Length: 198
Image (cartoon, rainbow, N blue to C red; front, side, top):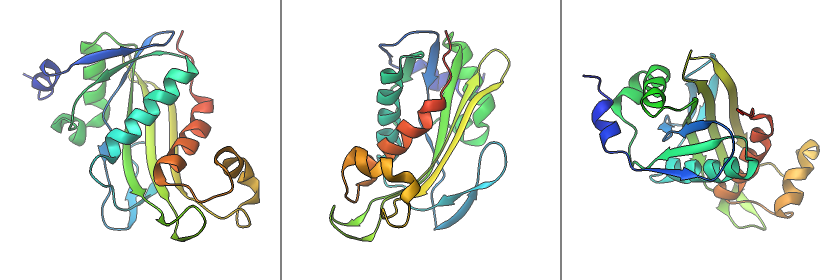
């Protein structure tokens, strides 16, 4: 019996309003730790690593789910669980496909959170800005093809340091963002390239 089968028996699924084919939104893997770099789980390369507080992976997953519902490009199926099953941690792509197959989904959206650092300071000034490192992967269940992949590895910068991204400041006001607000802005930018599955 596969290691993920007991996990599936405990799932409480809830459909989120959407259009198109079903995508399973899986819990995020935690790849945080001592500040430095960590290898990406797909495609080579590295992302910045740092602290990932308890509750942060679920917070990011909820933000991601909300942003995907707003896009209306797929119907989400989201397992309500507190922890990532062991099979996901050791072989994320294979385990994700098996979970998607067992739920009859077209694709699975999996990801890893490497860093989720809150700003130190206030909206008016910071000693250390918010920072997020996140990797997301949309995997077709049928054949394992990667349909979409994005890496977010950013620390908020002042407007004078990053004039090319002035839109970020204007969307949330000319201020230093909390890590949740910063993540929301980054997800909104990243999901512009999310494919439609209908």
